[in-house]
Length: 159
Image (cartoon, rainbow, N blue to C red):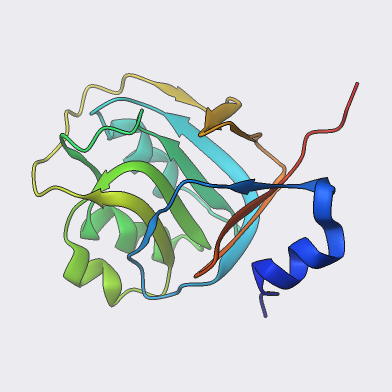
């Protein structure tokens, strides 16, 4: 069971970062959480497909697509693969496609929007690197919570 992000923030406050970016809930689950994995890519989803085809172990893949809505980074086939591999959710700073099909899958998916256009398949980008989206750091291994109210992320420890 996932605790509501509002309640979690009330409990932990400044130990969490709140993503002010407004994302659409597109998956069959609105509430999800798990350890962070990341992919940074621009209009190329080969790494996204490869990562989500591997064991998810309840993790959430955060994809930094640079905010581009020019082509989709996740579609129904990739999202279905993520379900089969045990991923808890996908957060996309970019676009998805196949919204109607993704809505039927038992996985959380949040994204800026959708575009039916496919992305490149060249494999350019980076996996499991720290990324920053709208001023919030997503560090692999830290925890992320998401629900209809938004996204909360464990703050990195101060050095």
